Length: 366
Image (cartoon, rainbow, N blue to C red):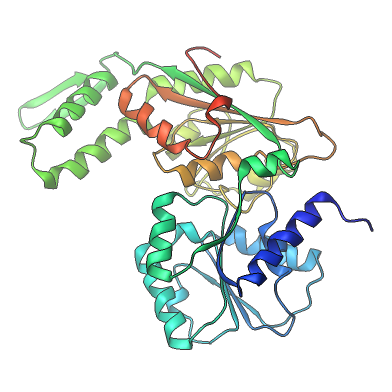
């Protein structure tokens, strides 16, 4: 069978890993095929440990190993959280989604490498911020040895092009939020609560130990904003005939949109499979299916909540940029709901740093 352009690109990236003695990080755009790129580097006799953050990523490895007929009985798996319990040595340590490692988990990896004198470590990620890159290089001594960007993958036709539309909406001024305190209770609005917290955060007399809680409380207002929920519903109604995946920050928000939802409090596998199989055309999720899942016949996503983390945003957007060869003209449409608050706009600007700013449009109405 004649090799495709994707095959040739994967082989080229695999060669770069091997030329660097399989020690470093492959920073490869999501949806390019980092599992196949890694398998190209491995030998059936190698003892391999694959570290992953979420179970669906392990499933992707198991399925791809079967798909590509990689013959090996020497592959073991571990979640990032439980890696500290791993005692067996290996020839090759593979850390998938390496950017998600916590500081403690990085310490676990350092300890393992030093204890067993591991000579081959491949970190995999499609989204590494500069801050994360520096931390991984400093702590793990792993440099980026392969760098294949989102724009390169688009230019090569490996993933689809994209367009991002940011729809802004003011926070609600309806005084319908009850606040209880020792003197009684009163009603306030999203906007008033947000402004009050912002003022406290900016007040130099506010104790430093209080700032974290104040910021989390302010973010909570954004997460459950009624005005952002209303705007999301309005846009969903305009996309009535389309398949749409909605990313939210809270289960209560996902459940309030009038569409199917899938999250930790309602992990209905039937709902998930119905959406993946195209039996239902809309689903809202919360911190699930952000990695390791391919959505077919899907070119529209709504992002109702985001933080300032560029890696998190890129993982969400990459869920719908996979190439569909029966739809070669596909363009991924990403709609982001943002309040008109300057704080959230700054979060969004930072979170979109991986993406071409010329492909981002800001508007008040879709």
